[in-house]
Length: 51
Image (cartoon, rainbow, N blue to C red):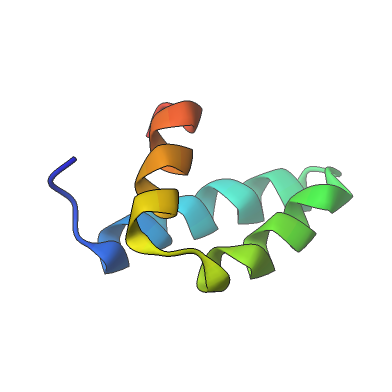
């Protein structure tokens, strides 16, 4: 994946924020976990979510 860390974090934060605001409370917890992930974990998560 050729996106840098900040771009991935921005996309993933947007994804999880939208989910949390639409009633998926667990997404808010996942949102905070993003900061603890390394680059490889972020790329894998983004790929799994189709981002």
